Amino acid sequence: MYQLPETVTDNDETYMLAPGMYDNGLTIYGNNFTLIGNDVESCNSTNQTEIVGDVVIYGNNATFENIKFNGSVIENWTGAQFIDCCF
Image (cartoon, rainbow, N blue to C red):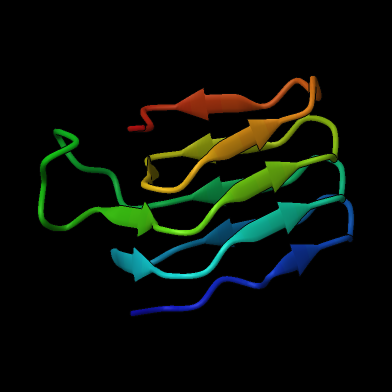
């Protein structure tokens, strides 16, 4: 299993995640945050990027792409976008 940073406070941060399971939560305070996982064809693919912990978003304009969420996602009306994500 892999680890995410527990908290992101900086603005304009982009993370490219390798395929695999990330077993901790993530809280985002920074604005214009982007998290990009492995591009797969379906939510049942074995080579996907998966976050098991809870994700809480306070920063504006967060973008998540190709991520499977197995914990809760709390989006506090911040304009978050979820592109090709699975819940």
